[in-house]
Amino acid sequence: MLSLKNLDSFYGRSQALHDVSLAAPTGTILAVLGRNGVGKTTLLRSILGLTDRQSGDVVLDGENISSDATFRRARAGIAYVPQGRMIIPDFTIRENILMGGFAANGPRAIPEIVPKIFPYLMENLDRPGGVLSGGQQQQLAIARALASGPKVLLMDEPTEGIQPNIVEQIEDIIIRLNAELGLTILLVEQNVKFARRAAQNFTMLENGRVVADGAIADLTEETVTKHMAI
Ligand SMILES: Nc1ncnc2c1ncn2[C@@H]1O[C@H](COP(=O)(O)OP(=O)(O)OP(=O)(O)O)[C@@H](O)[C@H]1O
Image (cartoon, rainbow, N blue to C red):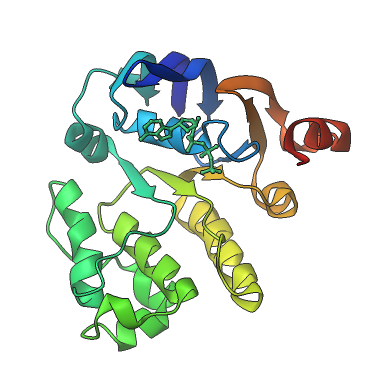
């Protein structure tokens, strides 16, 4: 279980998150919803200690990791698939994947599930990451995150900017990673339809605060319109 208690988070003097509490039970998907700029990316970054300053608790499986350095949080089992993918274009696909292993203590290896879910990457390990399409780069970012052997995946708008015909494939992979590896996933999404398909629970943010949360089955269209319509 990953939980946040009364989390405040800051960039310089500017407070981006206010008193955020949430819980993602082990093996579930929690959708983090809200308009652009409400603090969804900041929430994921705060879990890894990547903002300038934060207070409150980040608790993973009963252990309070909120004063740990980022690399210790990664070693505790949290991996990040950032918005924009952030792969290194001049590194090979293999190097990009193995880079994720540096976040963990164990041997550096291509994770066992990668050939099953991303055969294209396995067949092209020596090609540079930069030649991949958006969808393939997203696969690579997910493979890199898996290389640290995580318990929790933080995913920031994983289908953003990806060709419509590939979006469903990425969505299916996310659902599979949860179902087959039992990964707990925090899924930042603007796509409510996918959030409803994948997640058990949701948290809605507005201006850096939680304004609604609960089981995704209880997320009403009224709440979506109120907090997500532009
Ligand atoms: N590095 C930064 N330095 C200062 N302020 C920042 C920084 N990153 C984000 N912010 C501010 O924090 C607030 C929350 O931004 P954040 O990127 O977390 O929102 P978001 O919901 O993820 O938006 P988007 O969907 O556009 O990614 C915004 O007001 C933003 O301007």
